[in-house]
Image 1 (tube, helix red, strand yellow):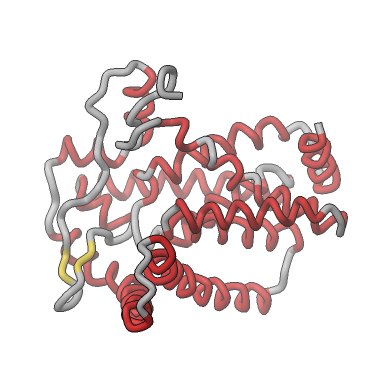
Image 2 (cartoon, rainbow, N blue to C red):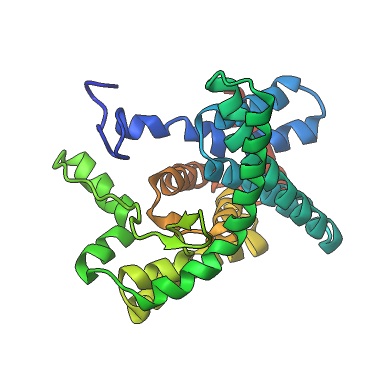
Amino acid sequence: IEIYGFSNLKGKSFGIFAHLGEISVILSPFILIIYLQNKKGYHYLLSIILVFINLFLFGGKYGIFIALVHVIVFYSICYNISIRKTFIFGILTVLIGLIVFILVYAVKPFLFQGNFSTSSFIDSINFAVKHFLYYLLSPLIATNYYFSNGTNLVEGIQIMFTVPINIIKAIFQTGGYIDPINYNFVKVSSDLRTNVGGLFSESVFRSNLVIASIYVGIFFCIVYFFYIKTRYQGEFLSITSLLLAIVSLLFFTNFLTVSGVVLPLIFLAIFEFILKRDFSFEKYYRNIKRWFQN
């Protein structure tokens, strides 16, 4: 990996190979359906649990959220759940989101930093809850700033296409990778700041209203295309679910500039095109099972 890998694709060592573990994440919904259809083979269920343990230990909160919502949406589409159940799943997702914040900002430091002080742990939980609440509200505050204060147009447009540009740079080993991190922080309270404002406002901040509108419009046209394919032809179930999972969180930040989100989307698109020859749900599940068994 060190010799042949595309180094520093994400600003970290080992580059693109660091993302190969995402394949296990994007295959989790398939494994879940196989388990639910057969009601046996607990190694399938165990594998999903291990994936999420791995995400907790080594991944960030965004990765956990998107992976979780991906599985929920995939399950909802496959089993055509009612509006009532959808609403319940929505509430559970918010509660799980709070739990994820507590795990990332309180439990994880408690376990890995060796600070087993009870008072320190309680302070960390309080910070996690406060951070979660501010996270729900901060895009509303940041949006006003990002709509009113744009950056350099050329550089900003490059950032909007960070992932494809960096992939090309990695393939040709040119270096000079684009850093998508927004260093323009907006104050949302006396002690907290944010650098995210959602897909649309961040896109306007990086370009202008016209370019951002086209950029966002094209993305949602792609989402709608896959949704129609799934809804009426039974194709691309998982990639549609992942796109909808990403859409559900675009209020908080522009994930289209994050390689850890876009690269799994590309991997999943390739996998779904491999399965594309079967269109019915029954054949779809059978194909997935056969693929894993082989």
